[in-house]
Length: 321
Image 1 (cartoon, one colour):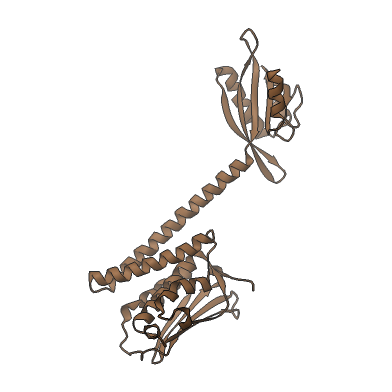
Image 2: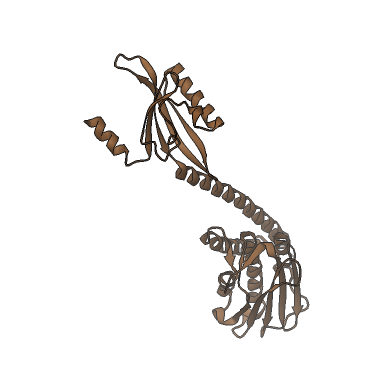
């Protein structure tokens, strides 16, 4: 009675049961519908219904179980259409009432969903490792550039901490989108607003919003940080009446679309000809454009600083209106 109820309970699961004789021919199968055993019949061997590689693997393991008298567990991949299904198979020797080995008894449980989750996790871990290495390389480059253009240790610490905070802010946005990237408007707001005395009222954004790739998001965010820090220290964000106009557009005149991002300051203090080139020139003119495969132009006009960054099409995608 207990065995009968146990078998009835198994019919509501995806577990299949089977038994084979000493020649590894199937004696009976239970709850095999929908599994790799679905087409097996009593008297069949694995090679009668399984693909060659799968049949060889299953037969070899079962043969070893009969030889060693030790149970075994293995995963069996089965091609079903264009998809691979995975099964967790456990086998052990089957004995009669006298204790004599009469064959194999086993169970099979589909684990396709589990394998897919494992594959997804492995892919994510590889991606995290790759991006972590890239981020460390960026930090190393920033540390070197900041040290080269800092006169004192306190000056280095202030500049370096600000740049690290900028990276962290952009990284948070990228992470929140499951590593898809960051939308430009959100990046502008998070990187620039805190440096404006009157908040976003001093910042004007117009043009095309796009999704930047993770790499572009980190470096465009860094460029916005450098521009905002300079504007807050010496430029149009150092006074409540100053303005910053940020414009973006997609230039489709070339074979590959290019995102053109422009920063223009106005109504701020008069820009001196002997500007401090240390504020972030190397970051804006070399590190950022080189990292995204684009180009940049930094200009000092009496009425305000202007910066233009071109980002190639493989680093962004338009956001549908």
